[in-house]
Structures are given as C-alpha cells and as structure tokens.
Amino acid sequence: MRLYHGSNMRIEEIDLKRGRHDYDIVYGPIADDKVGLQISRYQLQYIPMEELIKQLSFIRPTFQYFFGTERAICLLHKIDKQ
Image (cartoon, rainbow, N blue to C red):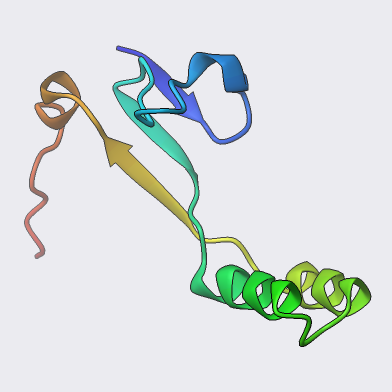
C-alpha cells in the first residue's frame, strides 16, 4: 500500500500527461475555487500581483483523501452512527 501525504511527492513521480502516479491513497490540499478566481482576476489584469498575493495569503486550505485503487477502496468501512 503506497500513501502520499501532501508535500512529499516529487514532480517526476507524476505522469503529467495522464495525471497518474503509483499511490493507492493520496491525502493533501485540494484546489479551491477562490484560488482559481483570484488567478483569473490577475490574468485578466483586474488586480495587480500585490493584490493576488494578498488574496491568496488569506485562503485556508481544505484537505481531502483520494482512494485511487481497488486495494485502497477495500480498506473503507462504513461506520454506523449511534
């Protein structure tokens, strides 16, 4: 079982053309719509670089788990709410 945690993957471990890697489970930050919005605003020259940096510095990251293989999915178990 290979687990990737947020910041320890080297870019050469990812097949950039297909977005693939050799990990069963990946845990890390997800892209936030607010980030994309701010980058678009900068690219359209609605805000300067200083404002982009300011806006991005206040965004709190959200994390997720990705179970990418059948082997990883088999580890999931339903927890009954009592």
